[in-house]
Image (cartoon, rainbow, N blue to C red):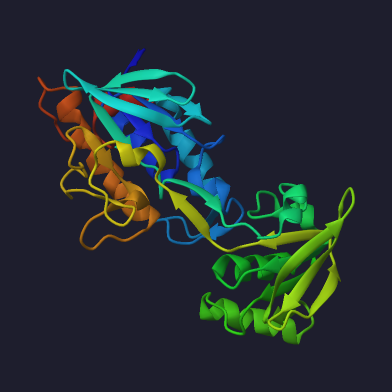
Length: 338
């Protein structure tokens, strides 16, 4: 069993910055995530998509943000346990005992749930034939946009992700955007951009159609689409992309005795502690009056949760706030030489 000051459940941006704040105040942590990579939704859903609302960074991708956050916590040598889910927790003598899906056990006075919206998976196409090509030519997220260069791509969806990727991929690919309605749900600026690209023959848009089937032997050859009356037609394509949103699952967290409200966990805004002593929730999974689902908000929540963990990890010590610019102890932890 591994003893530590804090176990963070979730290795997305909020969890990573919380780990940084724990390191700054001298606490150790172990980080567990059910994905096989660090970065959470930023890496899983939009590694190449620009993010514009990180303070002092005019523009960065999800991959760049993740890399910088990982670099920021390197001095603390925290351990990551990827492709693992925290399955069970129990309280023993004011310590939480956590067991993962791979049988690892941790003992800690603190748990920080930074699991975003919980475990998530994309809503998939209803056609069974799509399963044969999933992960190859039928995709629900984009990790490397270069594979589509000079290829034919059919995109299904009417929200921001479908519009954004249709716009982005139209620069180097033949793109057809298909939506079951005439109206799109995405940002108006994106809708206008798609219309402009369509007008200039840079992008084809087909509305009031949905997927019926995909065809191909060893590789994808075409996609069959149908209108509201059932009339269908075939489109030759190299790739089929579906952007229909995510199915959110809180998973084992539902069994932890936490207050749950509409798939989120209510917290106090002093330390972001839940109704269970020593269990904190930060990021998209937590709720409180005035909550904004921004990465910026998650950073703030992680900083306060880290200080909340201090009183349980060091009950005989008084927490002393220090600025990183002037504190020798903080600089020592970061390995900064003066």
